[in-house]
Amino acid sequence: MLRWIILVLIILVLDFYAFQAVRTLTKNYMFYIVYWFASACVIGNFVYRYSNFVRGESFTHEHGYAVAFLFMLFIPKLILILFMFGEDIVRGALSLVNKVYKSSPEDIAYSTSRRGFVSKIALGLAAIPFTSIIYGVFKGKYNYKVIKHALYFEDLPAAFDGYTITQISDVHSGSLESKEKISYGIDLINEQESDAILFTGDLVNTKAEEMNSWIDTFKQLKAKDGKFAVMGNHDYGYYAYGSDEDSNKENQRQLEEVHRKLGFDLIMNDNRRIERNGQAINILGVENWGASKHFPKRGSLKEATKTIGENDFNVLMSHDPSHFDYTEMELNKTDLNKHDIITDETNIVDFEKHIHLTLAGHTHGMQFGIEVPSLGIKWSPVKYRYPKWAGMYEVAGKFLHVNRGFGYLAFPGRIGIWPEITVITLKKGTKVA
Image 1 (cartoon, rainbow, N blue to C red):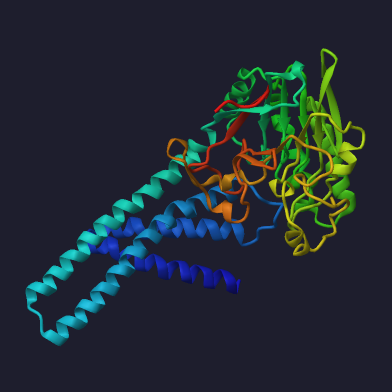
Image 2 (tube, rainbow, N blue to C red; image 1 turned 90 degrees about the horizontal axis):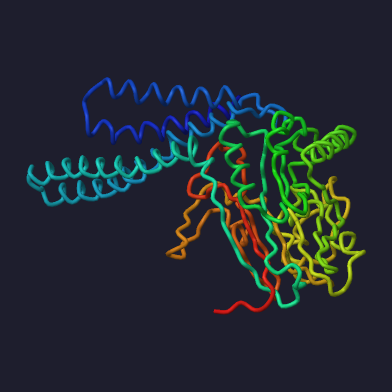
């Protein structure tokens, strides 16, 4: 209880400081009442939703919107605070100068008018994140983008020249709401008419049952050679059941059954062979592997590749992009936890068998960032945790694609980082510049 009191007091102090910008611009007490009423409702709702929150057991859409409304109201106020604080520093310095040099009343009046001008600028800039968050919550999370890549490989079997793969990732069905909007996303995936659909994990937030109401929607996905999937860190039930092994196993059994109902071939440290005209490529799938003690390490490249040939062409699904090229230093900082069963001795880049293309997800692009491809702008705070956080990367002739995710988690929206449907075309030969 004490921590909630302290948190609310801190928020109220900051809120009062931001309020000075409003008070500078208007003396209308109705604006004051609306300001404080909105703050009280948002803060009260957030405390009500989270004061007895149990991770994995009780997260609802209401919890997500409590976070969204808090962001919507207080991120713009942080901009107000920044400007007002800067103005107060300038004001304090000028006040000191005025006292020392006995400035005229006109100088003091100018200082007051300048504060009003700064308040107007601050309120104008604060409107940008406010409207962005509104858009992200109500529209942005359904702003599906089809992103296409063509990758060239000299050793691609000729029969697979032009082979298309659609990758989706991070559905997080426990967060989904609009059947109409999600069905539009499913139709968009099917419109690509790809040879194979590869899903790279996190079908649910915590429990297999979250997917029950979405099975009829997602089983509409179609691909010529099938639909393949792996599990992500959220799919194991640890967030709901912790160390309760029996509940975790039952949750995983149920989730495997859900994949079957969807028509997804769930690949668990194994591989599938796709043949055309006497030639073949392999679709590999490993269980979750992440270079963090917070996520389970159950993936094994050795298990997934033990039946494939030395010169085979391989496409791998691994949920967490940190599996691609983690270093021993990163791994040594990670204590193995109770959920770890198998740990790979090496990363994907250094693995003894050549893996041409790795597909991952997990990061969601943090559901927030700025991307302007025409200007080469691509930024999200998640890059400081995952250097390879979205899009296509190449290391030592091996490709990694990190999908930005189909759904969303915790914050019920997306701002600047839109939900992604990736279409990758495999081409034989060398790319011509």
